[in-house]
Amino acid sequence: YQSSKERRDRSTYYLVMKAKDRKSAILKLKISFPKYFKANLKPNKFTLCKIEMGGMLAKTRCKEKIPTVFEVAKDNSYIEAFPNEIIPSDDQSYAVVMKIFNPDQAGMFQINAIAQTPGDLPISTYVGSWTIDIH
Image (cartoon, rainbow, N blue to C red):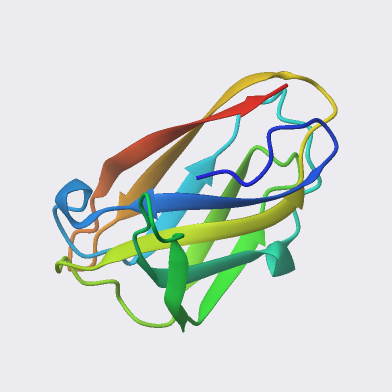
């Protein structure tokens, strides 16, 4: 979900991870952006939360924020999220919420997520992709 599609406009993004998309628990999450996504990404503009999915009559909303440390790469190509507690593979939907200004450049951007599983041998698995359209 994206609240605004206009260039340089303030927007809130919900990068939703539904229960069916998460096959195992999540220890760490890496979200990568294309190189031409020229937005100012700051760690304090991101939150991880359990969400209540919206629809025709209700908006998608955070039910419970999960304490998470976010780190942004120097070149703004990806962010890493380190939740204080492991995100279980349950029936809940989770989302990374970004509150940023849209990029100057119009276009369609694909954002990808890879999750690292807990355990003795951590394995990185593909969680999903989201497309963002800026007019």
